[in-house]
Image (cartoon, rainbow, N blue to C red; front, top):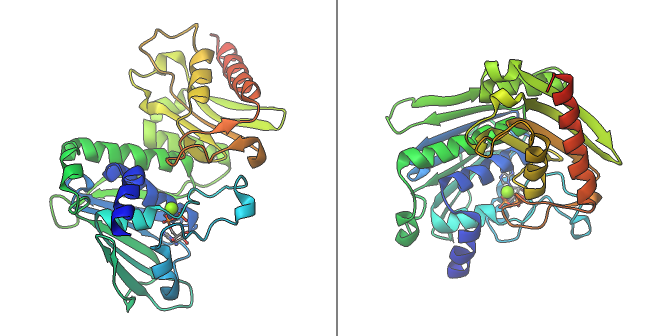
Length: 331
Ligand code: ADP
Ligand code: MG
């Protein structure tokens, strides 16, 4: 069982940033309004995610750590998914490749803690916590030194974690995020902070854009709002002069879920084709909303790819909406 868990874990947890992604997504699924992420040594020795979400009842803590146990899915609903997680793999995988502890408290309940080290579960014990959940992962890959060797420098892993946090922060502008690097000891050093945005979606997106990409970028971004055949596109796209030399400033979402989908990236690039040289990447934050029945998000375990029932409609909507906005701005 432990061996199977360790093998399967490799698919979910490649590096500290993938662990951070899974834990923050769980916090978001739990309805958190504030999420604090603390890391040390590029996440290799410590990843701690604290949220103010719904919590887990002590009696359910062992279940949360058993493979394929998820509270988020009925079989009949395989396509009708709005939450981030639905495979029930993240926590058991993390418990198989590191020292994991989950402390949690539901409203009106008592706080409890469970520990999972190298796949072995402890008993559930009473703990002290005001509300929500604290998941702490220490010494990632200590049980699999071969994997540890493949990790990059602390600096590179920290940077990858920062990218993951910013991407999720961009996806959820109404949620507050703090990323703290504890490597130096003490209170640590805040490396990214975005307080919960307020107001309507566009206002919130714009505010969050300024936090993540800078106010200069946000002030010069074009507002995108278009709909076609049951798909609707909202967000902001940069003027060609604000394109980047790397693709890190592309935030693409389908029904609020971050994706790195070839079709969408291609459509974005296609819209800017006349304005950008090959080595430049258009910067944009775009969410494509559609009926969950028209998109299959269950294509890849990392859930970054999606499959549209009518890919041509999605592409057409993006290209025409962006070209229109660029033309209005004089391009
Ligand atoms: P999944 O997210 O695919 O359901 P996970 O292994 O990531 O699977 O989590 C297992 C279960 O543990 C979740 O379905 C959820 O019920 C519970 N859980 C995990 N993290 C949290 C959290 N931060 N707050 C509340 N419940 C959580
Ligand atoms: Mg999950």
